[in-house]
Length: 208
Image 1 (cartoon, rainbow, N blue to C red):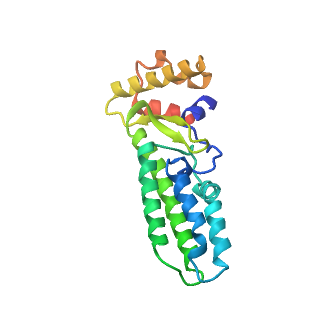
Image 2: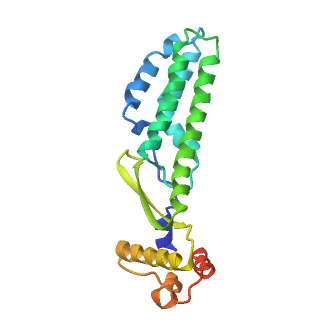
Image 3: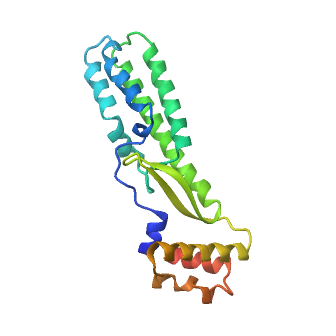
């Protein structure tokens, strides 16, 4: 169902990276690019390493492979950025490295950064879905670094009464956002809520 897909946002937005949304990214990566010439004894490492740094953002999004929008909370973005900058700064503290070492280490840091971003985005979504009913949390869009938010529907309801309230909140959200109720969700309209069970509601949402 189109409305439900809109709600849970199951398609990933086209983006250019996440780390570039951090306030220190430009300063840090400008330093890394400008000092790459002094990091290897072999001249062939320099263009390879420079390309890795230049394409960092685009390559990040190619490797994320997320089925949800690339939106990250500011707190988690700070955590990821701090970890990445620490690894990069430590790498740059060395003098000159043997051929092949420096670009390989850059690739390792890049892969670790991808994992950190994946985990950060997914963990926030899981935390959200462990609630009961509609919930929103503030994020930054990795597409354009603007303030955004994620809306999810949590299934962690402890009673039928909480579940009915959560489903009603879902319907209210859909009505407020789209100003209509989709025919595909007739099974969750108020007349059907009186005898609604957790199993019935879950089955209705699963079918749509």
